[in-house]
Image (cartoon, rainbow, N blue to C red; front, side, top):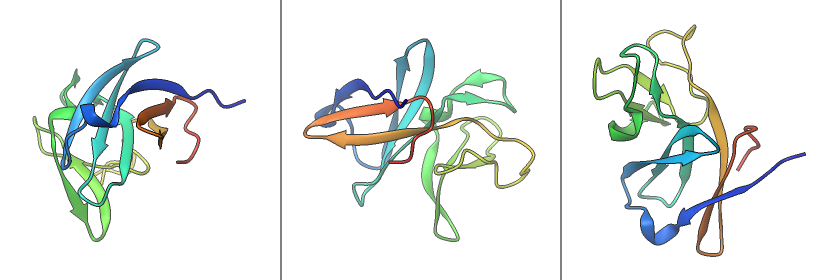
Amino acid sequence: MSKWIDVCSVDDLQKNSGICALVEGEQVAIFYMADNSIYAINNYDPFGKVHVLSRGMIGDIKGEPMVSSPLYKQHFNLKTGVCFEDETVSVASYGIRIEGDRVEVNLNGVAK
């Protein structure tokens, strides 16, 4: 059964950037794109071994939304969490949605 957890107001987000939220003990990096799409992945950078992905630069690679780690610059797909440079490395991706003016996350990875 999917469990949606209220995280914040849409007003707490800034377009074209990320924030970090602590959701049931997990650091979740939430990214709000210019086209109003929203993504959530784990904030942990497996290469730098610290929680920093929410601070990375966002954009796309060949049309796929991504975040570039602020440490060693690996790129992670915001839909899947898979690293573009090394597909054997990934971070968890989470379900995320906007309901009314609230942002909700599902740690079970339910699609948006």
